Image (cartoon, rainbow, N blue to C red):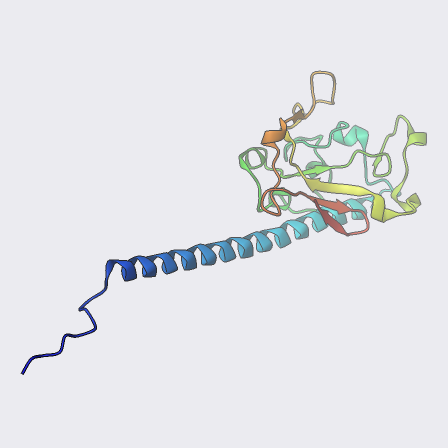
Length: 204
């Protein structure tokens, strides 16, 4: 009596093995992308929390300082300095924020870590009072629309801070980076967080 040929070959064919590998590869890629997005969302939330703490410190200092958050004389007319610079807003607000960690974003790049500061701050006359030209300044208590007043944001365009403990001049000041070196940590490396006096954030 003849045996009927089996319709199933023993083991797996090359095509089946390649199909399984392809499916597993796609799953690994999807899982990796989902994990990366979750991590970025978590970092983004922490970044906004740090921005909010800095903004709250600015408001608290203004409340204690007759409506003046900080002066151009205190910060050397700069929007970015390293954390331990006496003319840095980091040091001006040291009584309201605890240590350098308050100024380090979870998205900090190598130069931010070197200078221990991830954030830049406003020198607009609505937030930075000029003692030499008070008529050109405005106390925070006089601001009519806080939603339009930018206070702090991710430092994304400077490679170096200002000269340590030296006011700005033609030769001293934060060094702008070329556009291809700009650091935009959010929305897949395309956006920056901007924090406003009223407490809202814009990411663009």
